[in-house]
Length: 256
Ligand SMILES: NC(=O)c1ccc[n+]([C@@H]2O[C@H](COP(=O)([O-])OP(=O)(O)OC[C@H]3O[C@@H](n4cnc5c(N)ncnc54)[C@H](O)[C@@H]3O)[C@@H](O)[C@H]2O)c1
Image (tube, rainbow, N blue to C red):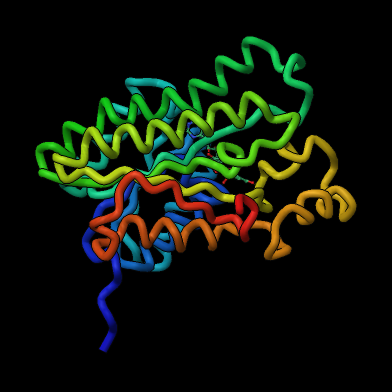
């Protein structure tokens, strides 16, 4: 007999679900029985993931969203509730970085956009999803931070700061929302082989450039989307229902 999934009947919203970590989280959640709202800025990417989930026999919807726009985030929460009746898990995964470069070479315009996408999105998710969680008397957020928040690398100062905000907002919301049975956790991945890799490196993806990054990861490899998705299942599933305010490094020992 087939074992029930660890997220059977849960409804999950995953921002940035069209690529990289978000795509892997969508597939891992669906494989554990969850119904998925794939939210992404890029409609081709989001639709591709949604179709793949449906082709695998899962329930999934796509919602185009810019996570920095309040009306889009409101529409996302409404679309999830309209499609599936509730929201159990909201993953704030969509994010961006400036290319690795000296801190004074990042323009003010880029800085503003970075903090809108990486930080304001958490505020907007709270504004539009906490009321849903309150009605249901529970729910959980999972925020994708970064080892950048704990062991900052040079050349990524403003990105590092945005992920520092993700970590502290995670802990702050966890203590404020805990009494309402709303859990808030984060995952801090090490550098991974997703489209963001060359942005973080600020250089072409050559074996020599990779070696510089690998040298600081005791387990000796890059993070994978599956590593992050496995942690995201753990933090979303009922088995972790006494865990909140945790910022879990998925980093091969990078932050030790
Ligand atoms: N890749 C890494 O090495 C790494 C390491 C640590 C943390 N992270 C974090 O993990 C998260 C996901 O990164 P990834 O590597 O999977 O990236 P990715 O570029 O592969 O995917 C990001 C997805 O988010 C979407 N997106 C970007 N801006 C958006 C917006 N404003 N609104 C809605 N969707 C938007 C993109 O269309 C894309 O589908 C980010 O928060 C990133 O900062 C990445």
